Image (cartoon, rainbow, N blue to C red):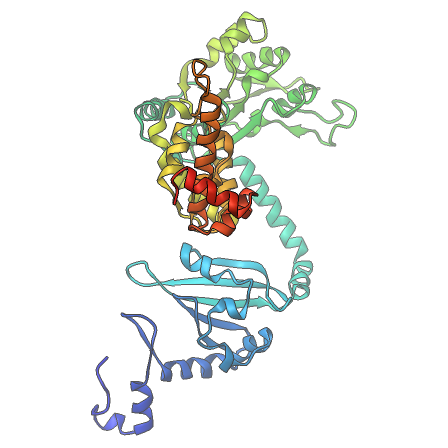
Length: 486
């Protein structure tokens, strides 16, 4: 920064010039003068709202008096300190790393006080973090509860409208949500996109956890019905005796316990849009006959009613069952199968698109880090190889569960093989039945890799490694020498 000492008549005040030249360096590109800090305190100290300014390294650069009093420290003690030293429960380091602000979060401070807070990230023109701004909205939850109580009626109305909108317009995924560019997945997405542009019914086939619901959402969102309702029904989750009234609704007094005034069914709610019938293979035969009529005639009656209701909708059905086998067993109607089987999409299991595992893993780690509040952006090459070598009977859903477990176990920013379940890390090791000592070899190989992974995890700390493996240090040293791991 250019010196202001010879800046002309407007800068004759020596103390002012001295303050302007006394710089507190924040990083190579941006500097904050003591003068500006002093001005910020003069502006914000009189305000009754607790405010704090954090730099990109999570150090406190400014805090007003009311916030300092709230935390129980003097301002002189707080300024320049890492925010984690002031509040051990702070989330600011995580917020600055993810570059995602947190609005109206409940937070329990290190001094035991609970409040509703904002954590706002300030970025530069290049999208890099410059500052974090913290603000306490309510200094205790009693204030917050007071406002909630006073606005209870409004809150209930808003909640009702939101619930109705969510039910009516529930499609929230698009093609961008479906990760993978392997040949099989690319072909599947191509067929699905063509199906979205048609008016025909769609049947989505695939194992559990492959993402059938994601495809259903994306098809609706990419169709000419995207502005109309998208209604979801899990045919396996609703008891068979209730499924008819859920799908078609019922009239007032239709049965004991019926809601006064009757109820609109899912088909009626979906009129003009799409209805997603998940787990269609679990639908009872009686309901299959009623569904067939709806698909053929585009009309139905409510339970206990005699008025025919006309509808215009598209059916998107999905199942992980072999429908042709169910037909042969007499558990699924053949005529319904052919009515649904117009545009069929078969989603490949994860084991048939190994090329996509790395990209899916990175996306899931990002999603889980945000959900869990644990920032783990990396995975070791060995751990990734182990994920690629596993068969994934539970598909993407199982992969997500494994990664969530690993993120909870790691103490660093990297997932290592030791954080993965044994059934994955030992997945490829098989006993050779023709070798007499194959079992011994297998045990030694497993032991060697377990010790090696643990040493990597502890950065070579043998005391910690022995404690994790539950063996003595003497035994550990002996095995390290035996397996050449020194």
